[in-house]
Image 1 (cartoon, one colour):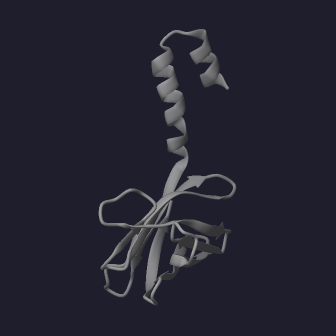
Image 2 (tube, one colour; image 1 turned 45 degrees about the horizontal axis):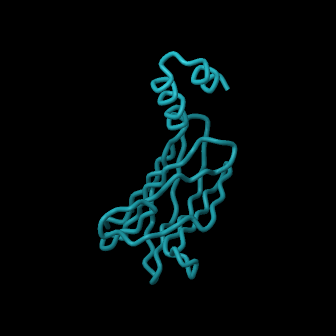
Image 3 (tube, one colour; image 1 turned 180 degrees about the horizontal axis):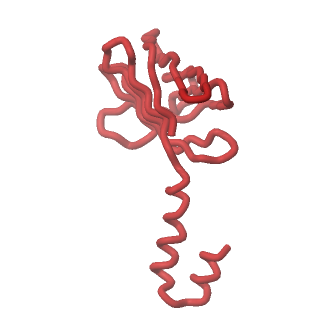
Length: 138
């Protein structure tokens, strides 16, 4: 790796190391979905741009409570359970940290044409709350 070689050779090792380790962040994006029914439900999933779906973190709300993979005050904790993405759909389940049940699920369906692209689906929460969502994936 070119970054490692520069660190080993010395000059400005700390600065070069900092730049090298910061590079992967440029290869990330997000799936951001907001409820289309007027509620405040939403989910923001940080993803890596690899050949497979790589989730770096997520925060979701049903408009009342918040769930997150991040340490956010008053948020209920969740972790990635499973995820799948291809050119037609995105299927993601987040589970509670005790691996007992799914707490947030996202089901998206994608369609692209010559000049347009649409992504919409359903965001659901433990307890039965379900919301239609429109999403931006980038």
